[in-house]
Length: 91
Image (cartoon, rainbow, N blue to C red; front, top):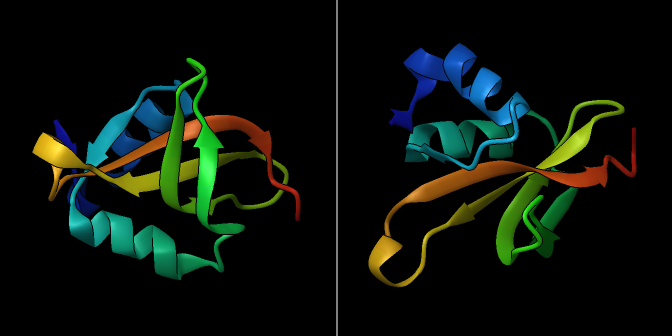
């Protein structure tokens, strides 16, 4: 499933469950613009230990940072998000 603005509640539930989720560009841009990101263009470690180059990290208050990134290679043109283990350093 690709989450969009109409399925933002389902996106938040999947994200909060720790899942790697695919989002559309509009939802990706929404989270980039809703609050100042806590990180920009950074290396994020996902819960499974995978390190990715994230476009930005989002967190609101004292919560774990959600990394957002764009797919590479055959995944180019797709957008993803997943909670990391890192707590918001500005929370």
